[in-house]
Length: 140
Length: 257
Image (tube, rainbow over all chains, first blue to last red):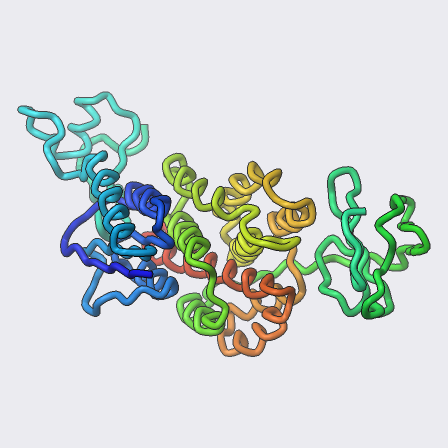
């Protein structure tokens, strides 16, 4: 059995993406246990509960990748599956629409896309709706 | 008759399980409790005969039981303001000697994360996250009440007890859709847990979340239940405690009532 614990400093993905990525890695042949998560207090506790040794100084702005597998090859397979799972989704903050400047406020994003639902994802405590923007964006 | 043991008989009554248990048995929420203890090595009834249930009476072969007094299974409640962070730490230390296997531990960690994301309007995306670990857990493990089911039952009861009915309902909804995947007895126990009904030993542990000093004393009796069921239920209590604690920590002050 091999434990692979890796801390990717400053890497960020939203929780839904990470939960799905975590399940994908756990489903790889030879992988016994996997936790891919932002290193929040909760997730550090979960990693400890699963018997992973996380280096001290790891915090909520770091991405924790912990994989327990039958051998090094299985770890490598798990990490490859993780790379694919994370690459399959936009990481946010990036420029998704080539050539077009990204919207700078929720309001302008809603006006452009005609959206009725906005998902705000940040590596911190819940953002307050009133901090999002000054324009007419809150419930329609 | 689903199964017979020295201290319990499990009956299938139109798809719901009714248990007849002796005074010294684990008091499942859907039990008829006898006044007498069981006789070691001797089955309480024979599973060769059909059971007749109704009119305040249960008959299984030579075993005839008339209800003398109705009882209400406990539904634990924890007052707001319980020190959940401390309780989770104590609980996690108390069950360190009862680790889950690696795959179950992964599903349990995923379940905790999915439940820790606060609030309902965002549930469309997050119920997807809840579905995967629930699918992995329902029916997982050996025995009449598989490990995965015990964890889920512990979590369901604790979410209700901690005053998180919306979270409990979300989890219950996902679990309910998977009930056919597990044993009849376990499915019935999960249905009890969805309503917040618990074993007395679980009730004792969950109510102690409000006073973590009591946890160490109250976990002992629970851990003695079944071959692993007690420990698995305690893992479920921990899942809900951690998730609620983390969920409340990320909630805005004005949102947290």
